[in-house]
Amino acid sequence: MTAKDAKLLKETKMEVRAIFTTYLEKNKQRRTPERYALLDEIYSYKGHFDVDDLYIKMKKRNYRVSRATVYNTLDLLLDCGLVKKHQFGEQGSQFEQAYGFKQHDHLICVQCKKVHEFCDPRIQQISSKMGELLKFNVTHHSLHLYAMPRKDENGDCEQCGIEVKNEEN
Amino acid sequence: MTAKDAKLLKETKMEVRAIFTTYLEKNKQRRTPERYALLDEIYSYKGHFDVDDLYIKMKKRNYRVSRATVYNTLDLLLDCGLVKKHQFGEQGSQFEQAYGFKQHDHLICVQCKKVHEFCDPRIQQISSKMGELLKFNVTHHSLHLYAMPRKDENGDCEQCGIEVKNEEN
DNA sequence: ATCCCTGCAAAGGGTTTGCAGACGC
DNA sequence: GCGTCTGCAAACCCTTTGCAGGGAT
Image (cartoon, rainbow over all chains, first blue to last red; front, side, top):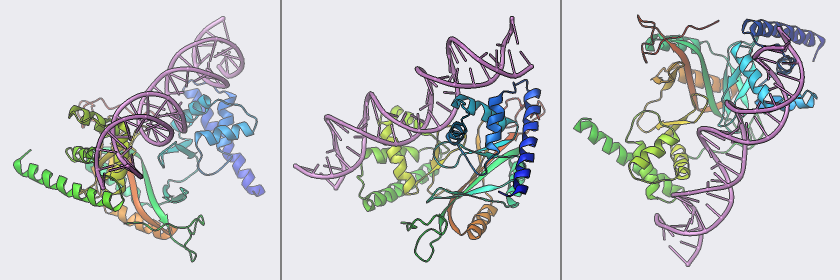
């Protein structure tokens, strides 16, 4: 990480802390060290994480929080819009930072389960058009594309290197 | 149900049974009565259902199947494309018939959780464009719009009649 | 000092698994 | 008859809950 990035990261962290503080005060919630420590940890990385990832990371930092607190804090962060929640595969929820990130959707590699991001303005158009049609106000959406990687010259996945299986039908 | 609908339903059931048989033979799976009974039950209703719905329906029909068999059979039906699986809210998976239904997506009322269907050809365009861009072959997708119902003259949901809550922020 | 938040561990709900017996092949 | 599918129940995983003690206000 460059010095510039580090500075930017620090600024972001300060901003999200401020937002969180305002939210907690407004909602008469206590500003506990655990909650800020979790927020800090979340904004120290990019990409998706699940509850256990976060729990383990905190442990490695020698900052002990219980899973219950992780869940509790994530609920608060979801509620104040600092974190987004996704349900990709079959199991556990995935989360990601939400502050300062622009709207995007996800393509999931069916082979290696890696998640890629993309943007397309037409999704907004579809949302509002369908809301209009069905008489709803769309608040949010989730679009997941599930896809097979293309083969490289060795027949392996260009992304993850695993051999690409042929589809059967 | 009109006589015409009944006839159509019967035809559909025969067609899906034939597809299932072909699939089972091809994949060296046994053609057990439980599997056909479940397929039949699934194609006797419209709309979404979860594993327990199906299990209960079978029980009411006095056809005893274990939950394990329901899961097993649903896996097979998913694999041969006769059933589609969805993960709407937080919990359990939902399923629906897939044969003879055109591609559609879902709008979920955040208030009453009722699921509405819609179609928009632009989603296909987005899928293929993004596949191209990221070098994947998109096999399927899921688009969920989460939305608040609009209020009627009494401030209630036009769809479900429950009072529409104001959003807080 | 209050009482909400935390940690811990147990409970919960949906799904999967292991095993013995049944049955499609 | 062989091998696998079924039913049953226990195991599993992620998440929620209950309770006693500690810390924010």
